[in-house]
Amino acid sequence: MTAFLNALGLVCALGRDQAEVTRHLFAGDCSGIREEDGWVADRRLPVAAVPGKLIDLPGALHAQHSRNNQLLYEACLQIAPQIEQAIAEHGRSRIGIVLGTSTSGIREASEGIAHYLRTQQFPPSYDYAQQELSAPANFLAGWLQLSGPAYVISTACTSSARALMSARRLLDLGLCDAVVCGGVDSLCKLTINGFSALEAVSAQRCNPFSANRNGINIGEAAVLFLMTREANIEGASIALLGAGASSDAHHISAPEPAGKGALQAMRKALDNARLQPGQIDYLNLHGTATRHNDAMESLAVHQLFGSQLACSSSKPMTGHTLGAAGALEAAFCWLSLAADNPQGRLPPHVWDGAADPELPTLNLIDDRQRLPASGPRRLMSNSFAFGGNNVSLILGDSP
Image (cartoon, rainbow, N blue to C red):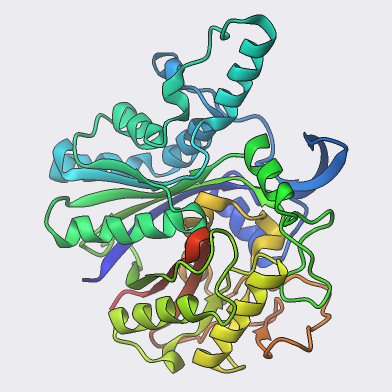
């Protein structure tokens, strides 16, 4: 079933609303990635933090305070009118919530535990529920007073891509008439130190698919769509045309070297959308800039699409936002299709231009690339995760 993505709210290193993110995205602006101390001992690392002070949660929601929920709250405020309209049309029991995250409120939990180790008591603001994986969905359901299905998916870096798939399934099964779906992850020492221990973090801005690539940058983001069965009658609608997933279970952290799982997910997404590879106009690559991920993804993409398909990785502009990455990069496809992008601009691939001779050639685009001016346009977004968990989504003009 085709599902429609009729509203988008997002917050990331590129900006705090749709217009600001759009402007910086299509300009290839990497200024949101800044070097900071204090995340990993004795290292200064680039991170992609949301700029500025976040909006405080209302007093009644203070018990659920976390940076993760602050990001989510800000993204949700951007689409609150559309959510209220859906509530008026369908009722609160018919609106679902499906989110992806990998950190939830672990930042606040870590700070609370550190305080306990120093003082033998938790700070007044500490609440164990802040760190539960269900916390983001519980927070939104309570604030919006929704009583439909509400849950969180945590499959590492595919979490929010899977949330979109799951949201579409709720509509298809008739369990919901609208679903608030997406993902959220906030910067915290746990994840940055974890990736640093894996020797996967770069000391410079990440450089995907370059011969000089040497690791990722970590970022944070919140992204929410309002998904429905019906197209938006107020303007051009953007649809989730297809989705595919695979679990190759090759290794707990390393991808399958030949890209078999990635290839399977892309093929399943095409089959689900009833499309052929030649009908895809652009691919947002997972493109983390680690040696192994970029190698396997280039093999899989080249095998399916050859070397002509317009491709880019947006992670040099946003960092790797982990559980939010799948929804964020689907949002970049959404922005490319949006009515306020009449020129058909696409996210450029920002790198040093040093092609890796050991990788198949991909068409890594600059800011001059455009979508076709007419006809159905279809864009794919890839997300890959630890444990061989792979998801591909296809967004396009309303059928």
